[in-house]
Image 1: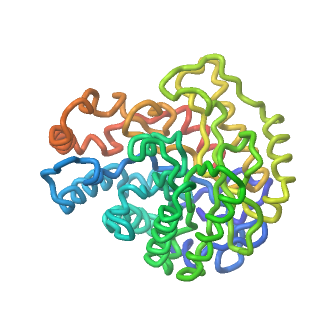
Image 2: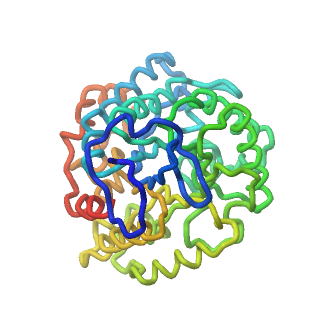
Length: 399
């Protein structure tokens, strides 16, 4: 079965998926995740991001209607991830995928939403139910992190989530809207409520997460709520904001060993922790009061320098961190399955030979870009991409 009873001495479980594997909701039980039959489930999989959702807000004086832009996005995404991709993921041993949802694209006006954005999640849920693969989705692009590219593009780097009370209410309301939509769907493993938050204080993070938890629970008592902190080994005292009066929680962080380096450059002097060093780091992390008796989930991990390290240390690190997570019962999704827009292509399990996919098109007008992409839209199908065989081997061996 793709959903397997977890033992820390087991390195993997493979097999043909079945939709019956996803009957009933997952929930946190102490530090474990269990299904409706009480069996322990270990979530191991892959991120599908980054994949943008074009918003009418990004096109000044747009000649397109919202419906036309939504149709364009749908055509892109349903080629980017198809049933054949889910078959591939299932064959790799994946039992969960993670997808981000852009608040900027979702919210058309305060407290009003574009359902077409969530149709990407609907698409994944439908295929996930068919192939025994759970879905986690995370809200991003909500002015929660000043350094993220989306925040620089859409909000000039302003951290509105932490400075504007009305903005926070809008983000919380968006989660109420989404939780109502998916409350009765067991293919959703959990709600990752905000991607990589950089709250100014522990109290700010705790207030925001407490509001999110109570709002979701007003409309949905079924799903795990996932709370994130920043990078795993970043020096900070905020962590997850403190303790919460909620049992069905999972705590999450991201881990890029070389995350301080610019992604578009090759850093041959990057140093990767050994397996024994990783074990020590994880053991120490598990001693923190905030993570005691909670399931943990690394929502993103990978080696940014994977394409250019000649001694394969980044590949070895990838395998080592997966082994450590398996041994410690930590859930995870590798970043990422495929990448359409360039720099990180070779650290994805499949990548397009060009970088970026449509080289040079970004200098054209929006109208020309859409016309160009529409012409070559079938290039998004994975059959036109290249398998990263060394990376895939490492991941498959450890899933």
